[in-house]
Every structure is written in C-alpha cells, then in structure tokens.
Image (cartoon, rainbow, N blue to C red; front, side, top):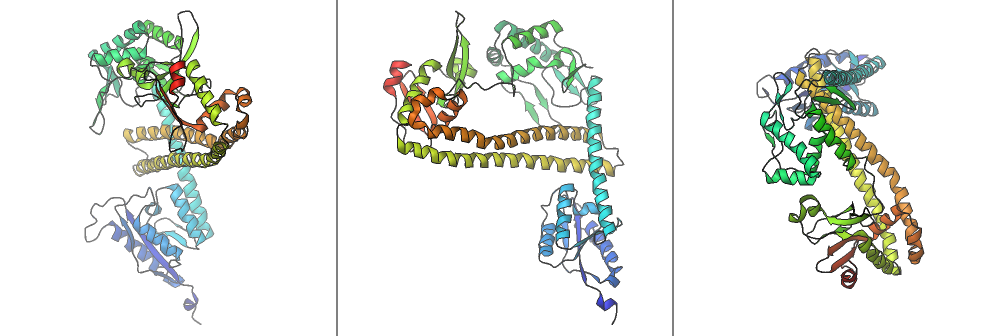
Length: 522
C-alpha cells in the first residue's frame, strides 16, 4: 500500500490579522501576503498529509490585544466542531499579542489535539520540541515585560531623586514646559497659592477657605491635556483645598512613595508658612483616606436623610466648656453652610434613643422578625453578588491595562528597545494604576471573606430580638450598627416641622411617623 495514502489527513486553517484597516482595499494586501506564505508552507508538508481548508480566517483592522475578533471566533467554533487539525500563522503575534489570551488558545488547541505552526518561527506544537520552544518564548516574553516594568520604576525613582518632574497633571501655580520637561512658576497663580495658605491660617477651616475662594471667583487649575482638551477650572471643594495645602511641590520638593527630595523647580511657599499650615492640619486631625477609623458610636450613620434629600453626616464638636458632643448634620450644610441647607443640627444623644425605642417596639412583632431573618439570607447573597461584580470590574480593568502594557512593550521591541519617552512614561503610569487596582482587588477579596463572619454576627442578634431590652445592652457598638442597618432603610427628618419618619427595608409603607416623639424630644 502507498505510504502517502496511509498518512492521516491534516486539515490546516490559515489565520491572518492586521491591526489597522489601512490598505486593505488593495489588490494584494498584507493579509494576502500572510496567507500566501502559509499556503507555501502547507504545500511543503503535503507528503505528511497536510491540506488547506477552504474557509478563510482573516481579521483585517482588529487588534491582537484581545480575542474579540470575528474570524478568530469562527476559527474557534470550527476547532470545537472538529473541522480543523492545525492552525497556521505567519507569526505568533498574528494570533495574539496577549500572553494570557495566547495561553488560553494553546490550551484549547491541546484539548482538541490541534497543532499550532508559525511559518517564520521554527516550532510546531504537534512535536514535543515545538511545545518546549513555545513555552520558552512565552517565559522570556513575560520576563522581558517584568524587566521593562522594573526598569521603568527605577527610572522614575531616579528622576525623582534628581528632583525632576516625571509627569501628571500640573497643579495651581505651575505650568509644564513639555520641551524641557520641568515645572515653571505662573506668577499670578503662585500669588493665589500663597493667599490660600494664609487664608487657612486665618480662617482655620478648609470649608471656609473653599467658600471664600468661590466667592472671589477663583477656580482650580486650568490646563490643556496632551489630547488638546481643556481640563480643570472647577469650583473649590474642601478636598481640593486639603490636597493643595499638603502638596510639598510648593516648597520646591518632589515626592516618590514615602521619600521626599529637593526639586528642580522653584518654590512658591516659604518653609515657615508651609510648616505652620501642616501643624494646624495635624492639630485639627484633617487626615484623609484609609487611616480614618469608623466610629461605631454613631449608630444612625448612613440612615438619616434631611428634608432636602441629602444624607446627614455624623460629626462631633466641643462646647465652650470643653465638653465633647456628637451630632448629625445635613451634608449640604456641612459642605456649603446654611446656603446649602438651613436644617439645624440634631444632637445624637436626643435622636438616637427615640429610634432605638421605636426599633424596640418593632422587635416584639414575630412576623417582622421572620421577615428580617429572610432578608438577612437574601442580603448576604445580594451583597456577595455586588462584591463579586465589583471584583470582576477591577479584574477586567487590570486585564485591559495589562494588554495595553504588552502592546507598548511590543512597540518598544519592534523599535529595537528604543521606545519613545512617551511610551516609557505611559508604561510607568500603567504599572502604578495596576498596582493600585491590585490593592483594591485585595480589599474586595478581604470583604468577601469577611462577609459570612459579619452576617453570622448579625444573625445571632436576630435570633435574640424577642429579648431586645437585654440584648441591646449586651451588643457591642459594631453589632448595634449592623442590626439597625439591617432593619432600617432610612429615617427621614424634618426637625422644624416636627417630622421623623422611619422606613424599613422592602416595606411598601413606612411605620407611622413619630411626630409626637420628635416634637417632645429633639
């Protein structure tokens, strides 16, 4: 019998791709050139039973950074259907520029016993040596990316140590000289910065400073982005004032992570003025971010709604006699004063007992207790789903940035490792954002892990609601907050009109307003 006739037929699918749609209307374009090279290679293997399938798998104008390509999806469907035994490409990056996507495709090929061949790179995954070469190529590609990332971070750190500006939006008081890559002082804006520092020392309130700046018609920094769009020029908020007051760039410094270095740019604020502001900020506990600790004494935090529709913040103060007190205030009044909302503050020690007494009445209702227990199980599921969706969004963003980074790395590689400064800067920005996203992902994972523990703690409280009087005194502050949040959707307050309306979760109608109680107590 003829030896050739005994060969197992190998049906070869040729996949071609071009990132842009430019010149695809020509009689002979790059997709045709790729296909011709692949057909020549397949004909050279005819003695092994190789043949070209009739279908064309051409993706013109599609990036290799993802798998959202029509021809690639048709190819995957045909592989699943058993129509293809071998995938042939001109170069590996025609199939994918993403290491993660590439690994998924190779896993699919292995599962379906489909070989993968690159005509210009000497390996064939139908052979053990070809698979070894492919794995080595992928490993070195990953290693190269990580090395470039490390070099980018080292370069950014070295630039900061020399006091150089390494990018980012300009701040009030400076303009960016993109030719010299440095910051230049804008005299009129610099004077505004000095006024803001002095205003804070005089008013000792960021909210008052923001209001004063807005009254004077001053806005935040206006600048033109690299894309030519205008940004900034907004009204001042307390957070913006705080950011400006903490910025060491104004004393001629640059920061990188936790380190501070002398900058190349000129200082706007003298050291003495800057230090006085920092001391005042520290004395007023104006810190922001994750370091702030949740106060579980404010058991109605997040539940109270002002008559204007805004949330009521939990806050604290000190009387002229030195006695500390807590209160709830509308967020609009908190940020903008009486012009934002004229609803008065409500003392926490007056409104909290009223709500607790109303909840005590609710807890004697057996049907309601059963409903709360059912909502507990439902709430756990819903919260887990919400956290899962948020976690997926973060991961999708990480994957998108990784794909962009790999694309930039390929640009550098194709240019002989001499990528432009803009590409290198963008790689550094991507690395920074990816690190932040990974931290966010870690926090979401921690929340998912702690969900069962938190819900279990409240479930124990639900089982004991029929003895609320003894239970409330035994609960720790965190459990009190959880219990009220589980029962109450919101509490609508209009103190001047003597209105206090408590609404439970998932109930069509609210409980009767507590007009009498608030009129007598608040």
